[in-house]
Amino acid sequence: MSSDFEGYEQDFAVLTAEITSKIARVPRLPPDEKKQMVANVEKQLEEAKELLEQMDLEVREIPPQSRGMYSNRMRSYKQEMGKLETDFKRSRIAYSDEVRNELLGDDGNSSENQRAHLLDNTERLERSSRRLEAGYQIAVETEQIGQEMLENLSHDREKIQRARERLRETDANLGKSSRILTGMLRRGCSVEKQFNLSLAPKA
Image 1 (cartoon, one colour):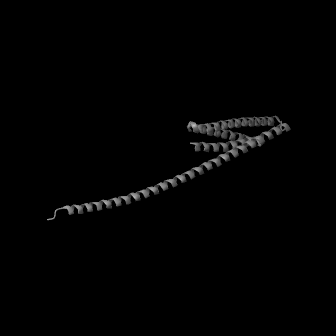
Image 2 (cartoon, one colour):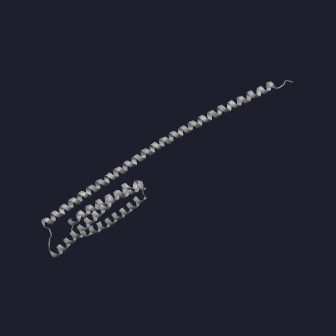
Image 3 (cartoon, one colour):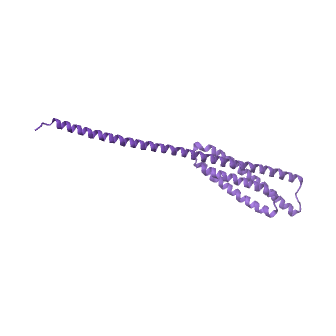
């Protein structure tokens, strides 16, 4: 169950990193490309929400004693999703303002606006970098868990093989003991027969 959650988790990390990068690019694109980018981000935000829903379902299936860690991670991802939606709304507002300014003949390129856009873009790029690093860390941890599971399976297989060898040795010893007992019984019967013959009256 946790492996399914971690798979959704990696997909969410990659998807949100892409969304962050695209939101940062929106203000710098020409009008036609901006419109297409906005539509693309809207679609990816819906995909991210669906991933959160799948992750939430997976958490509900996890035993209560192990659920706490995953619940905390879900709260963090939901907060991140809310932040993305807020950033996207700001980007769309900036995009709408630029369209209005173009229609009104106002270029809107004041130094203050440029500085604000630069700061926003820098922050978004930093968040994107952090998300990519988090996704990479999750992938590394998942690989380590898989390696540990393979090592445990290999160890268990060796135990089973040793148990089989001991069982074969036990079967061989039992067979040998059975043959010894059979021989002893046969010799006992032969001695008894000879004894009875010696006691029988002679004609």
